[in-house]
Amino acid sequence: MTLEQVRPLRADAERNRRRILAAAAEVFAERGLDVGLDEIARRAGVGTGTVYRRFPDKSSLIEALFVSRVEALVEMSEQAESSPDAWGGLVTLITRSVEMQLADRGLKELLYGDVSVAESVQVHVVGKMRRLQPAVERLLERAKAEGSVRPDLSINDLSITMFMLHGVGKFSAPDQWRRQLALVLAGLRPGHEDLPLPGEPLTTQEMLNVCAPGAANVSWAAESSRSGC
Image 1 (cartoon, one colour):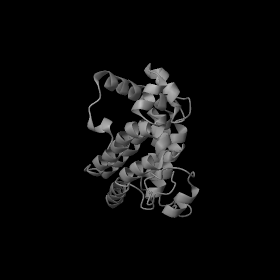
Image 2 (cartoon, helix red, strand yellow; image 1 turned 120 degrees about the vertical axis):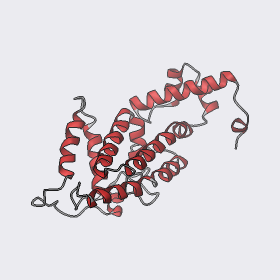
Image 3 (tube, helix red, strand yellow; image 1 turned 90 degrees about the vertical axis):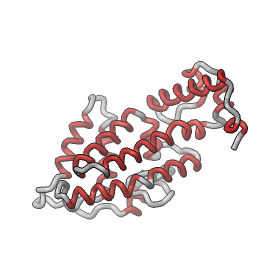
Image 4 (tube, helix red, strand yellow; image 1 turned 60 degrees about the vertical axis):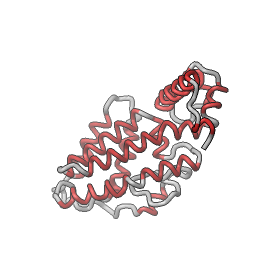
């Protein structure tokens, strides 16, 4: 624990810290996590040295901003699991997750490993996201039991579906991802037994093998601290 953690910041120092966090949230959401601390300092209206005094490196700033947002995703999954209607909970979870990540490019990059971050940040993120997988698995099994999703659907199918929807979110046409989501949701429903899914769903290891190296491994099916989607 540092002296700064023990001793409250002076009023002006605390104001600067909040300005830095607010500026970083804006810049990361707009441009992603590759933005340098000098750009964040300019947006915050402070000197680069001030940023480094509050946050010794970019990873510590990322951790301060995004760990709570990842926690929000986990809480969202647990709320969806508690829904009396498993299908409704699943739809809400997918929709809100895509909304969050499309609105914040930095969060999307952190979750899908598009940039390298410090191991301490990865450990934080993976630790929190491990709570997400069991909740989503239980929700999916409930949906199967109530007959609201096709029986051959796997949790890794949902992971890949989320990844595809993020890609559609890059299109300039506003809300095009919502149209594609509606098509995806229709495909998740039962009643298509005459159109079985070809092949088998990816295993967890196969998911890990095809995902980008250096990622934080926070896909819904993640089971290790290695790279993930």
